[in-house]
Structure formats: C-alpha cells, structure tokens
Length: 417
Image (cartoon, rainbow, N blue to C red; front, side, top):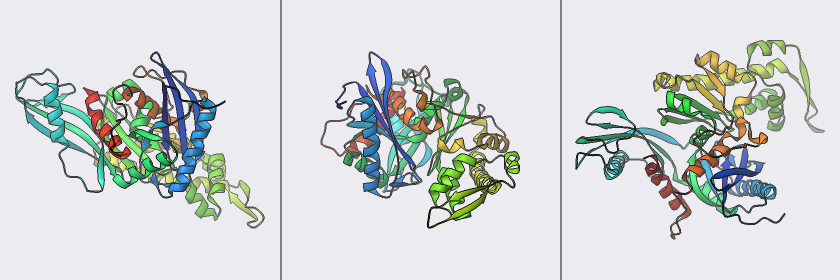
C-alpha cells in the first residue's frame, strides 16, 4: 500500500534508550483512532541522550517505515518525548499587584512571567512551565484565580529545564529521518497522561516510569504536577549487572532477565540449585548459570533503585502528597516481583500502570498490543498531542525547529486557564 498524507493524522515518537516507538492516529469528527505502530531497537542513545546521531537516525527511520507500512499514512511530523540525566526541575514563585482589583488573564500572564524570571545555566532551556496553584491576598491553594478580587496575586509554578544541546540533537535526528518535531514533551508528563486516573491525579499520586536508561518520576496533586525528577538508574542497569556478574554479552543477559528474572526472595530461594546453560556461540562455548544467582543480582539492584526513590520521597516530603500511592510503568516495571518489592519497601499502595482511555481524552479502542507499560510514553504523547493540537499549530516562520519547539513549550501554560 502506497503511503500518502492524511490531513487528520497525528503522530508521536518515543525516542527511548532501548527502543524507538512510533504511533500514528487519525482524527475524524472528534474521534481518534490509532491506525499504525512501528518499533525498533534504539542503537544511538545512552541514558536518554543521543551519543551516535547516525545510528539514532537509522533507528527512527526504520520505526517510522514500519508505522507507515501498517497505517498507509506518510509521517512527516510528530510529537517527541524527551528525558535524560540533563533534565532538572524546581518550583518558583512570582508576585504582582492586581491593577483593577479583579484578576484578569493579563494578571495571570504577568505573574507567571514573574515566576519564571529566575536564573538558569546558559546551556539549559526551559522546557515546561506548569502552574501549581495561586494565592490571592494570602488565600492559599487557589487553582483558578481568574475573576477573583484582591490586590496581590502570587503564583507557584513548576519549571522543567533541559540541556539545549541534548534537545537539539533529538530534533536534528528526527529531521534527518524526515520528521518535523512539532512538540517536545517531558516523558513523565506523557506517561502520566496515559496511565493515571482522574481520581488519582486529584487525590495525589506518584508515577515512576522505569525505562531503559532513566527512571522518570513525578507527583500529581489537585490535577497539577507538584514534583518531577529524572533518576539516572533504570532497566539497563539490571542487564549490565548480569552481563558483568556472569561474564556474558548483554544480549544474553537481557534474555536471562526476561525469562528467569525475579526480585521476590521466596522465588529466588525456590531457584536454588537450578542451572541453565547459556550458549555463547562457537567462540564462547557454554556458560553454566545458577538461576538463584540471577535473582540475587537483580534483587540487589532493585533495592538500590527503591532506596534512591525512598530518599527522594523523604528529602522532598512527598508522602503526604501521595495518598493514592505509586503507579509503576515503563518496561522496567515488568521485572518479576518488582511491584511487590516496591509496595513492601515503600509501605504505600503500588500498582502497574497500563495505557488507558479516560474521560479527559477522546482516544479509545486501544489496540491490544499497546496495553503494556512498555508503550505508556508513546501512547501518552498521542494523548498530550490531542489536547494541544488545535490550539498550537507549528509556526510557519523562518525560526529554527528547536526555537519553534521551545516557543510552543513556553506557550503551553496558557492552555491551563
């Protein structure tokens, strides 16, 4: 089937450390249907950052071709996710006087401009400015201040920044693969759109997206993001531990992890005395591996990840903001027993988050192949795009692609009011 342009098509690309995933959907009279998916191993990224442009371009191009072949639609633009150790975030407060004693949109714009007027390193760019709440004459936790009376307006916002070079490299790789980047979204925001219920967002919940190179964490309360952080430890660390521990290539270590990996102590004890032969090929011979040793190595790394996470919860006093517990997503959460270990160690409710369709978006009829934590970010990027698409189209000016993307990111704040 010859690929052709489709006016109502929407595309999203999850540029991950272990895989590139491309989703294509069509929009018709308010309903949106996913019509194509392409996935291919990622060979040019490390911890969410491009380290080899040519390999990354080839991986993106191959995933796009697969999505185009399935959908019959040519993909020439897409919303792209961004993560990596270069991402940082913080809260900031701005204050302005209310001129007419009634809060107008102009006042809201001014107070957010004041809140974002903070120094950031020269090599960083603001990716997101996400309002958390307002104060009007000291009245706390006002979610929508428009129309209220007072003389002093304050706003607290969550600012996310990223390295300009890292974002430029992702945009460049997409452009070399024939894709125009229309939006760039923090991956835990996308994952949150895919797996969190409206009730969880309202009551307060944490989400931990365990990818291949990084684990992306965010906390929501009153439907607003209150905290976010990228943890530089994730699924590939489990694989590398096995590769080093047993002296085998990473592809065999990954297979061991997927087939026999568990972090539950009871399961590990059951595997004691059980061995498996790993055929390393003609040159490498046969390596005998004890399966309970596999579990011990994985369990040690799982404890380390959860210890780091627990330290973040304690240091930032996040527990009171998470009465609904923690939602795990991403391919790394599929490791056997990880959810149970997290619930035991953190002493909060923990569930696995799968892509779902909620009332706040019109994406329905999710294909069965996407009902996995592995595809949460890619699906969430589609959800995010459908919420922004009509209001923010790509600029036709001569400014750079990255400049357009950053300009659109900064404009997203207005969609919240």
